[in-house]
Length: 274
Image (tube, rainbow, N blue to C red):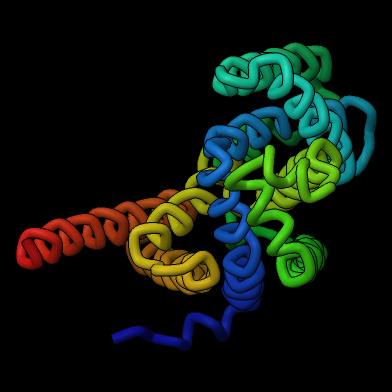
């Protein structure tokens, strides 16, 4: 039985609010990433975010703001690489991912003893140590993504499935792609303190991947993604608290368990229907 008394702790209250915010936007972005065959983009931008953290530490800036700035630049550059390697998108993501890691290591090496922060804090994150300000930022990006999803779901749907049709319809395809990358990059940058650079892509992609196996229409896929994102992170948070395991890792394992369960059930359901 779930003991809700753990929410008497302020850090658990903040963690719960953080997962509520992330569940509102990360699966929605994840669905579009998967359908656009850009699942690795979340992983790429999360690694690039480390360079933003490193620059923030060295320059004495707010690391969240420096991360957002670097990730936005990287998101625009990623779209440029996509136009060059149109049929080999993984080349662009590989180039950007390795560049981000290399820059972050070089810059952090130059930082020396300027800060007691280390990249480990951003590699793995900790949802139970995030501040109230970071929670506000997560809800802010959640509101932006939800508003954009409500008003631009049809143009994004067309763009996602057929760019040629989008061009014929007069949609600004390149601008929309760049803006999508930027919004995704900012969302990832804000998720880093909670999820960590190594696991942020899991929170974005896995709920969306599971939802694609369950939903019968595009809108139901988005709805399933949001619900599954919340359920997975909620129970992962409880598992982390009682098993004394890292929160991000616990959430990932819950999502993996759900993913495997859904695929096994689908397999047996399909066999029975044949």
